[in-house]
View 1 (cartoon, helix red, strand yellow):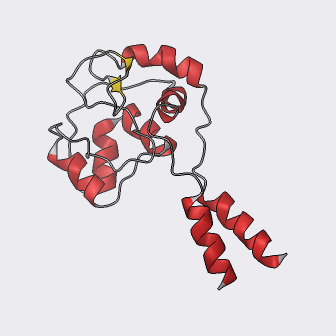
View 2 (tube, rainbow, N blue to C red; view 1 turned 30 degrees about the horizontal axis):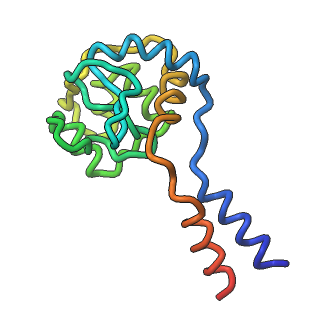
Length: 153
């Protein structure tokens, strides 16, 4: 019984936190973003047709910042990603509210800047929830299986 309980706990801990916003409201709110950003799946399915000034936001949730292949990010966002910045709801909302200040705090560089000049006044949680619902499917049970194996050893 103890190994089963341990495996269940590891499985819950391995599950990514769900976005707290409203994906339907976020889809509507994304209209503010689509002049620069698009959401297109890895297989080419267009979720939201948008601009190419900003990177494709497919699979944003849980992704390391500054890593969409083929997009030329600013040096400070790339540096933040290389230092471990991964997009979750809290970081996404903080970034979209004030990109420059967010990067200055993340990098510790008072001169850090962002290429994104737009500031989102509200609704970041909803937009993140919308984007979190559009990404590659998580690998089912891989982390839970590893946790179960560790618990039985």
